[in-house]
Image (cartoon, rainbow, N blue to C red; front, side, top):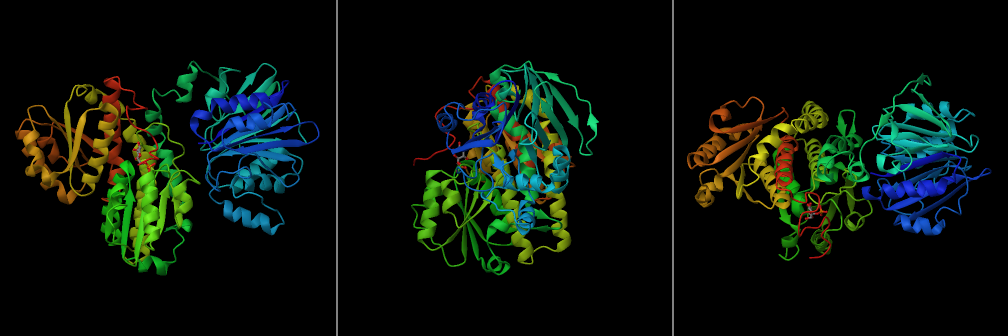
Length: 608
Ligand code: G6P
């Protein structure tokens, strides 16, 4: 996500802030800014685009003199990437400056309250609410103002804050968004990630949820939300810069897999209001939702696979006919978009050339387009009629993991909303689905923590020549993504088949020792799937099964079984994909492949 740096000390703050931000560039961002107190006033410079623009504008920090300040690289969430939406954000009087990572979920409510009290907003961000709210509660005591604001904010945040009245102090606080602080010679520094501080110190404090830090050039005090002082121990960082960028993980792909629980939660939680699903950005009234006759999902790569799962979920739960097409096919096939068709374009980058062309083709044919997009302000986000953002944060590994997982969540939310409005599910069913949704982050975490078992298994297959993935229904959609993960990073030939198709050709490829991964998460299809497993096994295949807890029968048919925790039949993809991601990853690692940058592939395919 975004990057935060803050400094208070004896040295000029701006060059340290710019240097720290440059170490966070790898995280991805669209704009940057710094604010420094010069002894009289807080001066601020912000710029859309690369950090280089900010460096040039500030003459490498020289135009912002002062020894206390905060800096930020922004990955847009609320509001387009622009100078004005870039951080820091100030209160109206310009006496408080804030940088923020995370999402304030109730910002609209808070904004309304503050607007009612006469506060004027200049940006579209959720962060500006924090600056004004701090101002509202500030009575000369920064710590008190911060704790009061904490009580009012819902969502996630890591904040760096400076107050004009306290020119030798820097404040930091966090909840569900990382933040570290450290002492350097003659100063204190905060950052959202280790690489930004490694040049200055290797001894850092990891701030825990709802902890507040007050820093001066030579002191550091920690408080809880009740303003009580607390003790903390520092941690010595041994990592080199390269490892630090990856948060200690060997690859960005592994790091991003581990970010899935949080990304999933960030994607559903702003859309769950009590016992209901509220998707404000859908821009559709209940009447319009009821009038939809067909959904046409268009996407490329993994986003297309997410769309395949979406088809099973939307059709099965909301009983709306859904067609899924590859954007590169859709755009040239003279598609029929009858009245009442809602086109859904799914894209992580929001820039994929074929997906964008498909969106324009749909518009030319008069259809309404909903984008499910990760990058705020991207072309697809701008051109779609409405956008439902996935809050995965920037993804660096070419092979998508967390963005794909968030796309699934967005589709579940859409299915739940449509099902409820169209009378396909009752209030109590919706409540149960919401409960299941809320359990997914912990369940994903559990599966991730099982990685050693999968690594061991993967090590046996690094020399595999062909791997087949089979499944039925939603499990076929999971198989498609599992197969793509494996082939794109390990260069092992793999294919996914609807299990019922095996007999129509593929089974002739099964030889002694061929690995077949069978996905069985749909209880009503267990028996059919077990027959398929037996068919390939009798022809010599080694079968890895991924199935629900409690499916004991498969143990007799398959060679190796991985169980996923219990959820409803529509959400199993979110769990079953985790072992498959890990499997592809560890095979690629075992083969010594360049996991994060596989040959011939690009993260964002902006040409045909
Ligand atoms: C590339 C990426 C895939 C991604 C696909 C679609 O092939 O490597 O991970 O699924 O493009 O990209 P999009 O940004 O539209 O989701």
